Amino acid sequence: MNTIDLYNWTPALRVMGLGLVVALGPLCWVWLRHRESDSAARLRALTVLTLFLTFDLVLFGAFTRLTDSGLGCPDWPGCYGSVTPLGAQVHIDAAQMAMPSGPVTHSKAWIEMLHRYWATGVGVLILTLTAFSWSRARVSHSTQAWWPTFTLAWVCVQGAFGALTVTQKLSPAIVTLHLLGGMFLLALLSVQVFKSAGLVRESIPASLRIGLGAVTALVWLQISLGGWVSTNYAVLACGGFPMCNAQWWPAWEGSGFEIWRQLGYSASGEILPFSALVSIHVVHRAMAVVVAVAVAGLSWRLKTVNVLVRQRHWLLGLIVLQIATGLSNVVFDWPLVAALMHTAGAAGLVVVLTWMLTRSQAAVDVVNSNSAYASAVPTMGRTDSRPLA
Image (cartoon, rainbow, N blue to C red; front, top):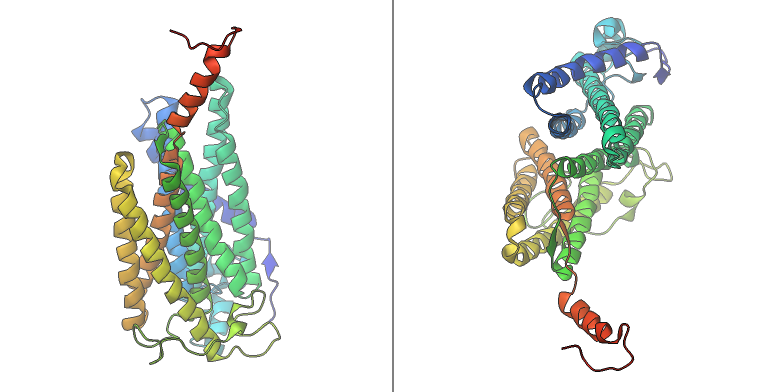
């Protein structure tokens, strides 16, 4: 195989053009369905649709990774300098002939490029969302246009990580950060859906909101560990459940948690031992127990919060889904559908927890504040300390 440039900008404009074509469908749908609505309703519909398509993009990114299609086109942003795999058939044929089960095949090339088109289309939708928000802000003097602006900046960062995923040959750190970036994009869009709906934040006990924040942090940590398991291909490192390879706690090998290294190698350049993959898997399992208990405890506390009752049910359903699909990955040797549903459950947890944090605020201690106010009022403008009648 001939050496190719990792970055080939020749097809960049045409790739962006295809992304625009992908985005035109959703944009036309929003415009036609809400052509008689006001601008606020159109903005809300566009925000919800962008969140939905971004959720699907995260799943398609997981599908790309799970089918080993991340290097289906080994350059960026096109495929061997072409806008589609059709123009790269000679190169793909040569690569597939050299390695029939290797990273470059016709099907993998199409999966990789479809993911890039979809990501570009989502970028166009976010760009449109930003322009529309600033157009409305000039009239309403709203500051909410900064949210889509930051989202647009973040999607550009995501694009850079997408490029690095290819050029750094699926480095576990880069691929995991790319996954987390996609989840953060979901969180940003979830906040904007809440704000575009015009909902009012509701007060919940301060201790409960702290617990909600702590559970959210644990879920993000677990998603990071799950991404580390997936990007290191450590899903099947443990056979059996609840024990791992007939052991409750296998021997620890810390080289699996060295961050900046190539796939399959330690930071020193040595081949990563299998025990390192086992350690990665076991840590993810152990943290899953912690997260499940924390979510169950939070759901129990949320029984008295009527405003979050629907989100509480979603939270319980999603954690059950995560347990079921996580076990399926181990017991049934990582079936594709179960693995995709596991990613969907993680993305759903991010959306629901972000919505709960945005919907709620810590309640002010009314008793103490009233007492302080009552003690201060009698002396305002008076020389004696007698209470007011």
